[in-house]
Amino acid sequence: MRACNTLIPTSQYKLPLCAKPFSPFPFRPLSSVHLWTRISPYRMRGRPFTSLPEAIPLQDEPPENSTKDTVEHLLTHQDDVARLMKMERRSTMSETHNRWFPYLDKLRCGSQYLSSEEVLEAVAPIMMEERKQRLKRVVMNRSYSVCLVVEGLSDFGNVSAAFRSADALGLQSVHVVSRDSSKRYRDNRHVSMGAEKWLDIELWNSPKDCFDVLKSRGYRIATTHVGMDAESIYDMDWSCPTAIVVGNENRGISDEALELSDLHCSIPMNGMVDSFNVSVAAGILMHHAVCDRTSRLGQHGDLTEEEQQILLAEFSLRHSKGALIIAHEYAKQKVAMSFSKL
Image (cartoon, rainbow, N blue to C red):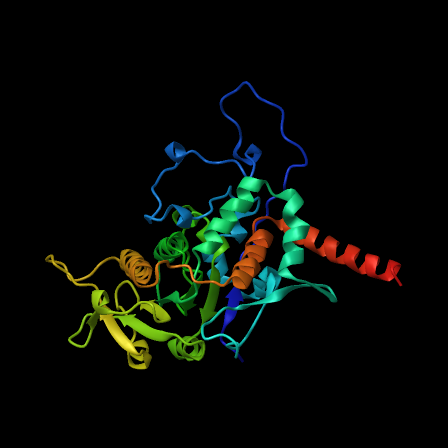
């Protein structure tokens, strides 16, 4: 049995049918704020972990059933995988591409399929222009060439913080290798700021299962490790497809992961302590990878126009539950029109 399950979270938003009447009172319930309302930076509690304005994560209101969208739920309920899928995904590397891109240009709607172009046409009426442009800017800065792997983390807060940094920096793919899911953890959605909604999350039962698939997709495996054979992250060429692996808060990377990896890397330390918090280390690694890719390639985002359109369709479907329903209705109308022409 395959050890991988792909998680692509959905939202439970319900779009308002009309604008709410003006209220003279300065305070409104959170549920009355539209999805496309721009949130003032002065009302935000923290600053985004990036210097790239286009890479700021999309932040939304908590869904009606927020317990279904927390990182904790995503990492402990693998049975929801099928329900959470949107665009169809490929299982192996395409022969026509030299790098990994997971999505096919089709959304399954019953017995019918919609292309990404049709998906965007279907959901366009329910999205404000500002929202569309925001999604386009985010997609332009996305890349699968660098991905994050967290192995054996025992604190959902660290996982959530790493997810938030990955989204903010333009990484689309994150992987979680097995950990003890029997413990109870607090809700850390406020840590991730909902970043898990916009990432492709894959779960694995062992480092071997994860690394075998990543290598088949063209990635080199770089595990963080403090040792004589570790290469400084500042000496690495991050334009090569790379999977960054960070380990457990206390034990670090497992011996199995170290043995199976292609190289060991480390962040040079200049102080008395010899390690960072794992989520901080993950953020530093990803930030340097993005900066190095930008200096070498001109930009971090490297999706083709076709891939950008497909990912844009995926994001458009994720932004609200109503979007997926509308896409299915569009497919039904498409079938009805084809029969009427016969």
